[in-house]
Image 1 (cartoon, one colour):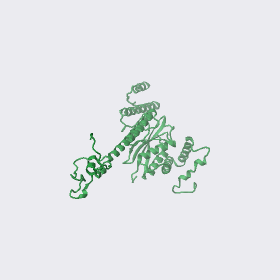
Image 2 (image 1 turned 90 degrees about the vertical axis):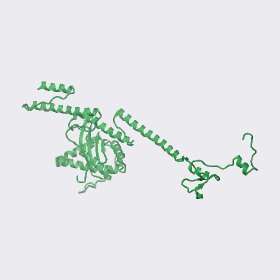
Image 3 (image 1 turned 60 degrees about the vertical axis):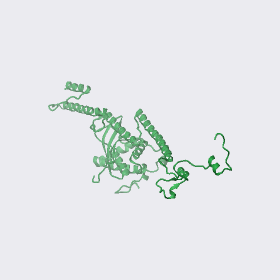
Image 4 (image 1 turned 180 degrees about the vertical axis):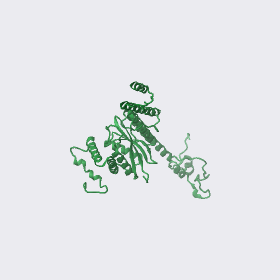
Length: 207
Length: 178
């Protein structure tokens, strides 16, 4: 019995799963008990093998250990923490930056620092986007062909009826309502000469 | 106030009293030992007097009662789920009740899988085939009920000990016929 037990334990230590004891013909109660206990150990080790291999590949779903397998406690703990981290990573991905990892040593520090950095960087980006959107709000593009009166230089507003005078507005009004440009009125030398010759300065050589 | 006969629950948050003023020298905290002494002697007597099933049922009911009042008095129930869970984790940690971790959250079907480590009730107990966190089961269900307004059931489905005992709970909203 002991020789067979050593054989099975050796196989276990080699990372393999031995066949269970067949104790159906065993009459000695202590031998039967010994065989059952060893079979239980083999079952626990087999469960651990079936659990840890997918876990090592990152497969977290559909793997479980029987509640009474306390040999596997560290693996259960690892599985649980990975499941929790997976959930937290999904939460962070959806914008929940309140997530923090506790009591996992250096990993906690790194993960928490990453979340804080993500939140800060997103805040900075959002700030830049807001600034740009604000700037864009001020810039109203002028493009296309503007209908302008050949004489008074009024501009016809978009979708304005050409026959109605109200559709035509002064160029200053048109531009100041569509851009951030503001106007101050002055008189160019040519107009000064034409309309106010008494105030006009004589033209210099340069002009 | 505390000793009249009753058929329904009469507990209110004020029954806890003004601990800060009532314990100016000893303060707000007591050792976990005192809590465990109360809980496990109570369990002992209840089992001896009423049997295991009845004692377990009483612990679940008491936990549910406590969880409901805990949520209503200490937690902001207006938060969205994520913020609520973050708040619950923080409060449980600050009050040294346990370390709550969510493993799965199906908000459509109201089904959560969560663990509690360093639990006030059971950390340090040897892991056996027995689940002993009936009070926690009720407590978690009570919190979720007070938050959602729906009936919940929490069931301890696993525990393990690698350093500290960790308990895993399946928490789900009950269907109307359950």
